[in-house]
Image (tube, rainbow, N blue to C red):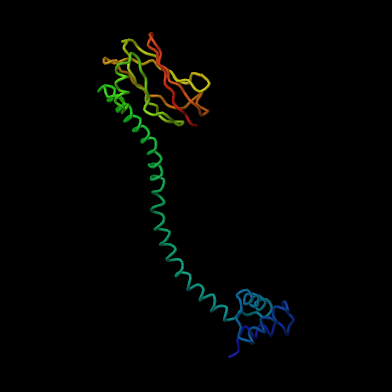
Length: 230
């Protein structure tokens, strides 16, 4: 049985319609039973509609086959979209909850640290593990200490000590250039101890170096140094 596409190509060549080079290439493919692209089929179909007044039957079969395969592709795509929409709508709520966690953790951490410091100061337990140093602090008329010897920017500095006076004391921190970067007036408890917290950050904390904490009780002044890293 003769291929209608081959008949149309031969007729178009006889009537010198269309691009001769393309038509001869399609003719050669038909004669050799080679694969003909959709572009080449559409090209022949358009010329046949324009000059021959007919539409090749094999193109109708091809378009019908293509239409029949479309539902097979659409059905799984639709189901995948429905499966993806559910977690996507929940994503903003999950992100919003996660964004609150760091702030909550910081607030809880500061509160717990403050409670621990206050409890230690009220119980009269020294934060220095060395027994000899604890005896010196208890017997001294004025003393000051920190929980660590080195801090980084944003750390919380725990300051504590003892004074033999019943008045308030002044505590200050100076940077490596002698610039005042923090100060506070602290009340002394009944057992003569005091404690407070300071944050390593703000104006004057922009460079690393050795910082000094000073405590004054109107009778004497004591100091302690610590290292700070930006």
